[in-house]
Image 1 (tube, one colour):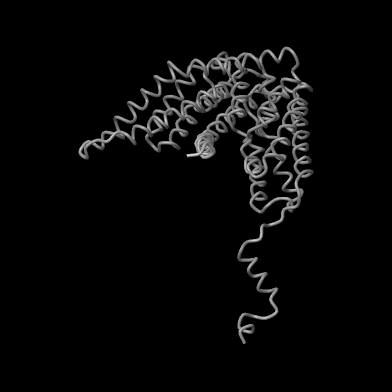
Image 2 (image 1 turned 135 degrees about the vertical axis):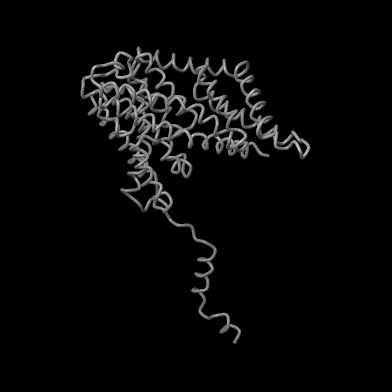
Length: 374
């Protein structure tokens, strides 16, 4: 098997995990948006704080509870991505080892990269067990219900706990410290760097490492990385979707269809809406995404916008401090992606199929085959 094929399979497994994780992230973000937008009407900016749990106002109590529900949904992010990466590799047998491994990674603060490693480890461990363990026919039922989940989980946890967990936790902590350190030096530079990371691979490891680290820094009252990340998340899909609206003729029918979906996904905060465009033409699309995300994030943060919630979708924009600058950053970044995309794309010309080519050859003949024979 070639390295290219191995890389393609790994990408497929990781994207499967991400696709299952996205609904949990959106659900958690929307629940938090409801609570924090609602709390803003009462002048409350820390609705998650325990002091609001027993407030005399029953609605404020509910908003506090709802914020906790959103946090629960977001906490499922690492177990879900780990479980479904393992599922992609080893089918149902990988789910339990992957999920428990993802929980351990979360508890060890090993971050998004640790969750990816957990899912891959659990999946290939289970796959190896299923391929190599052969039991008598009478005992075959023991393999999927006992041996695979129990020993697959045990092996996964042992390797995470004693081998890979600590290094990934150190990477995650180092990344968080680096971003936190940049905040004190130059917040515009910090925002641009986060924008570059988020726009680079559209929901891939670099993107998610930046986003989850920025979200983690919220607990330390460091808001600039999160503000930059949440702006950058939605710029590529909005920019590319808008490009298909402005000049449809520069895109294939498939990409025009993907453009409509990208607009919707951008508005709800899913950067993966831009993936079909990046796959089709990475050398043109990725630089545009990176520049647009960096400029948009830097502009929003530089002008003083502050997003205190892990929410990028439109439903959270008006809960942002100085939301007009936040939206301005999104608009400018989106415009840059759209303009650069249209500038460097040529008009789409459908590839001629063999059948149409044959038909054209027939039309070019002065006589039919029967007439030639006669």
